[in-house]
Image 1 (cartoon, rainbow, N blue to C red):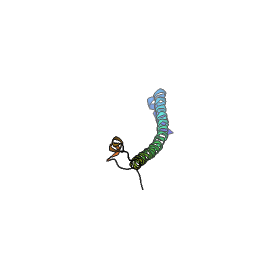
Image 2: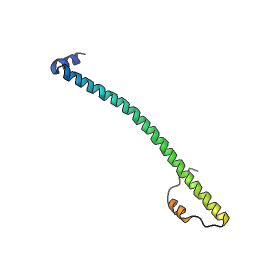
Image 3: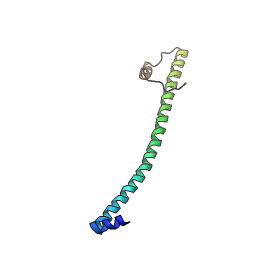
Image 4: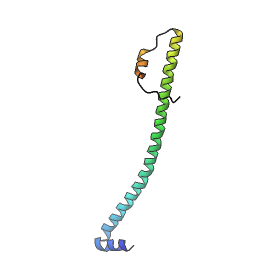
Length: 93
């Protein structure tokens, strides 16, 4: 408390009030941004999981397409196979 009174006497009331308000704004922004960063991290984790699911489903669709094409005696879609060739499978089994 004594530090604040010393600040007021040395700098004056308007400058001291501006400094204290600046500190208050800084503290509020830090608190708000901490919450936003936590939300962003949660969304990033969720999007990564969804991206893995999409890759897994794409792998499954390609396998089903090749199997059905083989059973029906049709040629598999070479463009679809070449787009997925060389990519790491997202499946974990």
